[in-house]
Image 1 (cartoon, helix red, strand yellow):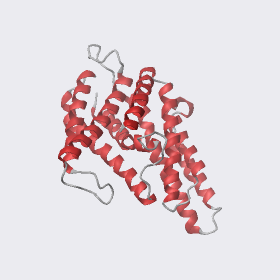
Image 2: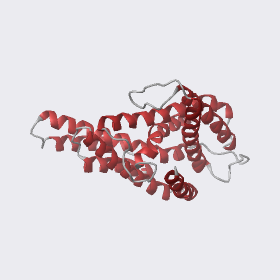
Image 3: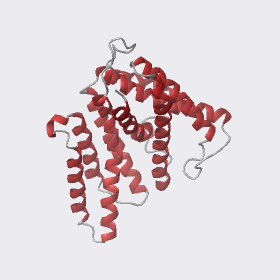
Length: 275
């Protein structure tokens, strides 16, 4: 616990500085986080018995993130870059003598790259954020930073709410084959905490807080799914953590796994339903 507190005391101020500075510092930060997460996920995949092309996969994930950050360079041709990455990985698989080895190397490389590249939505959410009313309580923050802050606080509130409720009153286990500590009570506590935080943030952003009735649970379930998805990979690799980069917290992927799924879900909601 002492290590976790020390690590949090270092990481939280860094995150706040990145949020305050915005682009292009945010893009650099997300690119770095994605690269570190890619290294860890390909290490886990190797531990699970696969042989992905780690360097190629990491490069593909990084290119997708950078394309999101600087869409004017290739006019946001993310799909084209993914297609090129799939083709290059397929060509690399030709070097495997056993076609079965080539196929699984091809598939796991593409999977690992696209999985961690979903972190690009940490940047994308700011790009699609609607204009904030001048009289909004958080207007000084700006729409881009404000919506990213909503996402960050929503995910953190889910993790905190689920942990506290699950630890104190959690009794009903679920999906124990993936994560034995998860409880229904913790899930409910996390959903409630997330919904409250999202409602407050929506009000601060000048949006109708009633959106939280849908956006809160959606974000919470996405965050939980992201955590469980990483657990599937770690279980397959026989690993407790994705790495030991952050004392008391594990690896980078352990810290951002919830955002991998939550970021695209919140971004899609904003695009579809927020005006």
